[in-house]
Image (cartoon, rainbow, N blue to C red; front, side, top):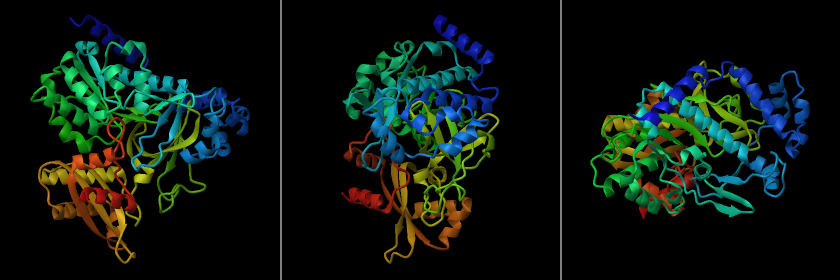
Length: 509
């Protein structure tokens, strides 16, 4: 009998029944998070500048906070505050951060440095424990809780820079796993510290027979590549041949649906797929129940959330946020409406735009899905295409043709006379056959059918659609050329005309 596993399962179920993850009063929980953040940081330079002590005395603390503290993106938060925090303590959060998360950027620009404080690590671990407790909602055997968990992350070999350690957030999190995880975590810190992606994956494949993996976690594009390497090295038919107890995959970072067929083709039988919302700035939401990929927002784990409507109330036609956008908190959000997410956190981020758009699929359950990046909305000619809509178009293309489009990007490119635009798609094919003309027809027809703004644009300034087919590995080669491979790295779904030109030149080679 799986004695230890049965104990763990019973504890999870007992805690879940007595103390469910979701707060009974979400609004009170969010106000409590804001008060704690303001109280902790009231004596910092930021807290004194914006009079956090006075805000704590306000009758409506949330309204006072929104009125007093402006919205920040990375550039203004970094230039005015975080650069000082790298030199001096108590700037936006007490003390100095021990870690900085380097953003995974896809355009070759200089990486952002996001502060990661000890309190932020604790916040992330609390959300992680809440997700683990939610496994009580799933029908899992007790033996599962004694098995290994393989987390495919960026390198845990962190670099020292000006007295702090820096790397991608998944590498930082793995370097700070709670002690109880040490016996279960694979591939282990030694392999996780290997900086070269291909070498790290080769070692994972070689060590795979020594592990009894029941759960996987990581970005789907790189997870598929890793599992294929394990199957190839060990001469398997499916990943279940070597890990028969594999039952759960926790995905995140990018939408899973474009990778579902590739992932499931590597399995012998279906497993539970759970989505997560883990960004460089924090762990915001997690899949907490079966039969949905929507994620429960972490409202009482140390974070405070606000939302800017991703429409004319919040953004202009170019996708830039307005000088005075409408901002709402949890009380005022509307289901199935896109919002840019604003976060205040124990990393010393205050009313911080992380660049993602979300929508509430079930407000009563506090469940959201990520609909894209604010900068990944394709709206040059008013087509208002979100990453969610682009992913759905590719899924429809794959369904109609049987083609395996694994990666893609699209952008608006000016016509030769510069008066109008066309949409240039680049599709990364993993398997199957597809004709460019077929892809043009199906993508264009699908988007006109499901998106009235796109249909209007096609009758005006959007004069056509073009498709360039390539192998998915060629697109990964484009990232690798910029030394961006594996871990948290994601291929951008939307590019500027300049970036598309660079990619097209690369593919010609």
